[in-house]
Image 1 (cartoon, rainbow, N blue to C red):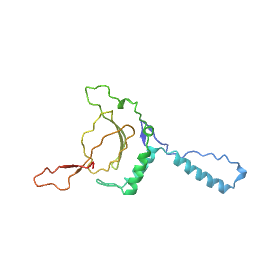
Image 2: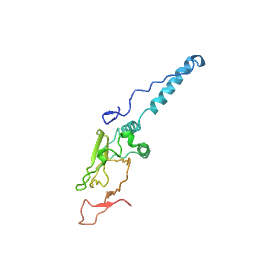
Image 3: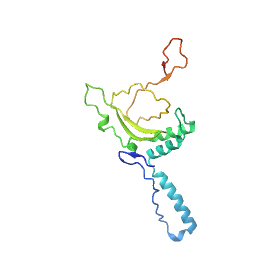
Image 4: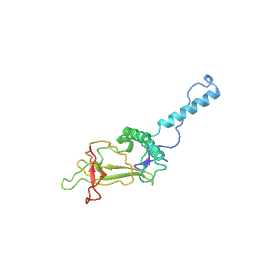
Length: 179
């Protein structure tokens, strides 16, 4: 299933067409078919966009997920590696886009969410934050969140639920987990 970015396909699921330009007399029929298959697989793999690879890997990793599911370390490493390679052009965003500009200094910068894909197993989206924008403190119950900053910088503060609470304290106490 191809992922949609900006209303168009990120990757065409059809394999790339391979043309063998070697002279016909230089190879046997069996060798020729084998080489064409080998080239077709390599060309198809290299034509898959980074976003499509991330989508396909996410679909595989989260296929049998459930609330609270934490992917195994090897899956986390694969997903993190794909995210590390992702560039703004792969998701068709650029710092010059209007969603990253803030013209009115009297109001807080708006935060825009670009939704790419959502299912019961996982979702893809991009938060577009102009300079000085703030996302309120919020929770992701039962979710594993992978994030990638495509450009700019961000100050991040995270919290974990307090493990042991003194008698009479608030049941919803948070601990700063920034270390």
